[in-house]
Image (cartoon, rainbow, N blue to C red; front, top):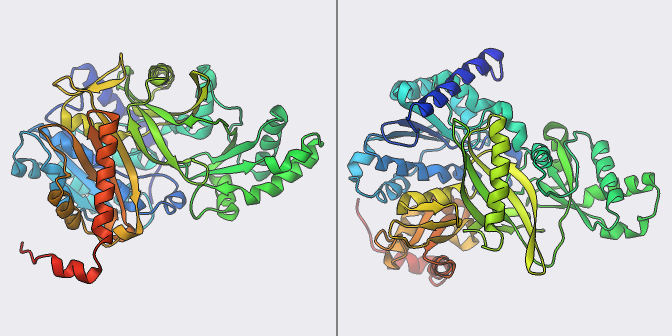
Length: 522
């Protein structure tokens, strides 16, 4: 039985977090050399939402960019996954380390697994295995160790206390500020432009009332977004279309409430397998908000990623234009770096202001803010949508760029430069997903990219880095970051990868492929 959120656990966790602040103040930045880093890539989120994401368990591989820390010759990493990580995937990342012999990096990396593929948070699985916890504890130099994770919850807090190692992430006591409702409160506090809507409700009747009140305030409103308070990548969103109800615009409040209540059952759900029965079941547990859907002939979805140090200094790390899909362009698929120069610096400014509010509340490490940008003539109107107090879909592509190129982000321009002063751009996706890719093993992928010279070139610092390779065979799904010296070059590299994979998986029958591939020996 996990002793989550007991006062003793919270007090001890806060003591460990204070150690982070003390080490930082003593000029011991955590991302430098000679540290033991425990990487827990647990998606500690509502697993019902995760089940709607093909290959969700393999999203643990998105934090494998952390292995780049092994370029520091005294750093050691323990990386824990639910299912064993393929040695080929491990080797793929280690061989990209510049200036470090492969065997040297390999001996400083310990891969562990729970051998549990169930749909539960990885951290929960670790806590259920005391021998695994003890093995991790024994392997780490406690005074030089810290934990990194995808998102911080009471599960990660519990693991931190059991290991007696600080967690380099936001305290779970502050999680509300990364929810949909908490985000809206932060935007209001900072006078950040954001859509009209509600705070968290946990009853269907209250949801109906908030949606009706929103419609009353904005009679011209065409659509309303209903969001689970703790959704992931837009999978917890649904669109309530008011246009079929326009004949009721002058009706009394009760009539409108009845019409909206009935319309909830026919909303457009962004999760592939979602419906009103499954969606409504989550509302009492997670809560939900309603929000005005931002209309516009030309819309984009930029985001900004920031960083709050343990001593509460705030800096902007990156900006992106997000690539969205789903029935109503609500589901995150990928991103382009950097965001368009028409609004890049503006979202940096807003992102910095939001980060300072979060820092004052005690938040640390990464945070992201999503916006909607609507063209108004020659300018773009920005609307803040949500805050993520965690690593996100834009974290691993940017960190991959930074660690592979050894370049720097210029906050004055919002551009990234290699050490040679060359601008760097990329297109990244978690969702290159096609049925014909199923059955491709990671080894097959390596053969294809080697034969077609599509791998990342360390001399030019351009090319593609792959992730989510564990999801390829079963789900036909792959992640990639294509880096170029311009948006056009990055896009071309990405398209070349897709075209090559399409060709390799469609031109030959299975029998022809079997006959054409030579026998190999290990």
